[in-house]
Image: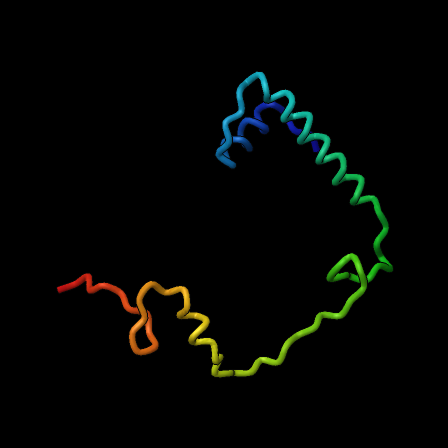
Length: 95
């Protein structure tokens, strides 16, 4: 697949970036280089390769899904400018 100036201009319009006409030739060459690299990747034989979660072999560690009280009320409210009876206090906006 090859990208021409018309397609590059259309892609720039779709992603809402302004590309001047004199810069379109550089954009076309960059798009074609990227597509060439992707074509090289499609030639790699990966039939015996297991899918990976990370580049290093590791198991996903999950925490228990447990409902807890939290016990963090004072920490959460410590940055509030106004606290009353353990809740955020905000000015009344509707009469």
